[in-house]
Length: 405
Ligand SMILES: NC(=O)c1ccc[n+]([C@@H]2O[C@H](COP(=O)([O-])OP(=O)(O)OC[C@H]3O[C@@H](n4cnc5c(N)ncnc54)[C@H](OP(=O)(O)O)[C@@H]3O)[C@@H](O)[C@H]2O)c1
Image 1 (cartoon, rainbow, N blue to C red):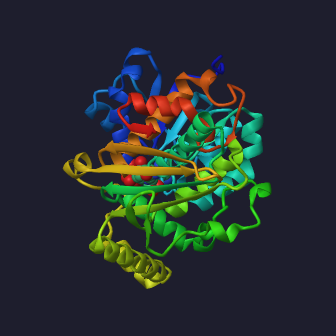
Image 2: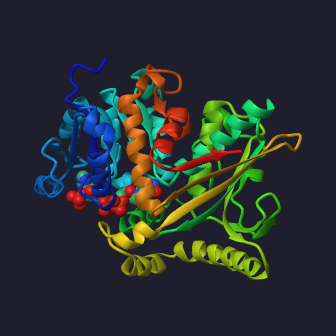
């Protein structure tokens, strides 16, 4: 039953941002939003911008809600009146906390596209238990970070159990990507470094419940060295999103009860041959040098000046021409392997992120009874533990490839 205060099934917060605008367009064109009579609203801090967007996209059916990220009273009104809030207003450490708190207070489900793991860790520590009590699913990281990783590991584990009756003790994913960077993403990255969170970001179990930190934590450290992987038939190098995605996957492993020996790592996939070996080595050296340079304030200040500003991002043509693919290998203790692939067309940080965020929100709004552990579950969850098979089916229906063989 909807709560008596609910005026909207979905409220999209941060609607006027670079990803927010794409999410508005995605929802407006979505067959279930058009046909199921879904009540939805666009929200943000600036009424004039919101109304201009509503006119531009011809959305008289969508409401407009105004709430600054620091206005707790307006955020209370917003969360009290919504079944699900989806947010693209970041950096989330700057603009996200009061909104999530309001959602938890009012038992409203919440999804976002943050990759700011120290901020997510704060939500877990302060809000997980209350969200569980209030049956609110709070699910950060529902964009390119970290759905392909989290759902990829989830499918590998599920397939290993279903087909071979075993658990995965290791899953690895190798990504190929074509895409650009948004100003908002870079602002979020710089904010984490400015706030002195580099050390926290290095903790492989940052997001795990306290009792799920294995004694052999050092065997889960982020890989830096180049390597040739026979299972993936490719040279691999460090993937810059791995320090976010692996933490989310490890939280899922804890919440969903994967094997206690479960290991997860991910990489950038560079291909076969001598030139690819050189590329993997250069990537490894480059990533160490970048980490070192970004720790220096003047280098960050220069990078900030050269980077796109918040509100900016790749061109439409570049976003349409983008793509991603993740090749996944799961391994059981006896060496049994399962293989999988997750892929989609379009810029991963924009087109795929928009699709994943909106489908996650629609799963919460339209399929609450089918979600893992039923309608009364809650907490600060991950995409796999909070949305599971429902999200897999929705993403397939939306044209994304999610295959296990
Ligand atoms: N997971 C992924 O793969 C992925 C991909 C892309 C982006 N992201 C993340 O998503 C976030 C947004 O990215 P973006 O490129 O869309 O950034 P953006 O264009 O800068 O958008 C930021 C949004 O935050 C809003 N905002 C700023 N200050 C606010 C305040 N005081 N109160 C309320 N709203 C406020 C802005 O509102 P105005 O329009 O009024 O300025 C805008 O809607 C970033 O944190 C980024 O890291 C994640």
